Length: 375
Ligand SMILES: *Cc1c(COP(=O)(O)O)cnc(C)c1O
Image (cartoon, rainbow, N blue to C red; front, side, top):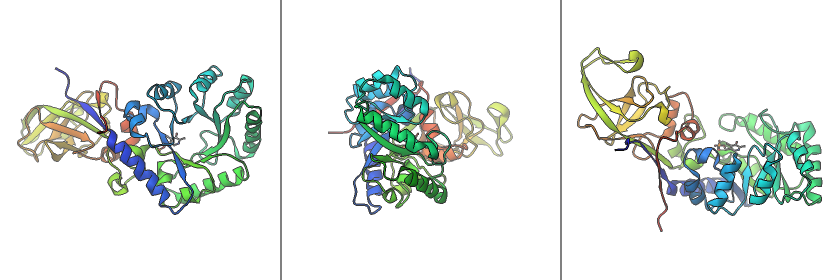
């Protein structure tokens, strides 16, 4: 008898969210074709690479971090470009990149030195990252052009197939003034340098008019979270953005109780009943990736009825209020997030975090079932 928890991955939603995102960007008014790196890092935000490779078949490339995951995408039949968002880590990685045709971000002088020292044709593209104000990765504005020229010389010598330009926004979700300032910095520093441009994550890609205002002949957006049906904006729901949840986390009631008024529940007795109350115990806890910091009141759906979490989430279980669902017995279906339940964003916001954290934090002990595409 297996534990009833299950994450169902809806491949059709991946397809829909990708087309929705690219259509949204195109509707910004540009006539130029904008291409898409579908971001599939962290095991496709917890959805699995199999579903991602199939669901994002219409994307122009896949972007991720881990060389092994990149190789896995090739093994799954992905033939278009793959980009390593943090680039490579050691000189020994370069032969693998070359063998599997994996493109790389180059964000530091250390990486540039490794490319120079490799001294053999790689046949891959290098995308040079500018630090335009995020202060995480990238060349400083005053060193960018020199780094770019060095990469161009490697290309001229036949070592690299192409050199591109990238930057990353810190506040595309909540501050367009800061974002515009970063974009202005990027445009100023990269002026006149050839090659493809990539600057927009989900929040920037879905900001009306932002992507089309990037002066680039060959632009690639880099959406991640929106492709999985969650919102890149705090407090703005994914449904209003036309996105569909790509994962449903489901489980069942494994116990029910009637508690008299004044009884307290779970660790720390963090919730106390103020009337006679039916409580359900769900086979899902923080060791599955459900957030331990979810507060009493976080929405949960039981037998199709929206109710709420009560008390503290434990490692393997959580408690729910069964007052709105008096008919629910052991075995009743529970949706923690996704289709037929609350949006993953709601659960995340009730836990002081974002959907990216919950989706990518689903643990290995939760079995995944991929709903393949029909036809
Ligand atoms: C994760 C990541 C993205 C995608 O971000 P979302 O907010 O999920 O759209 C894009 N670019 C880089 C460099 C990233 O690390």
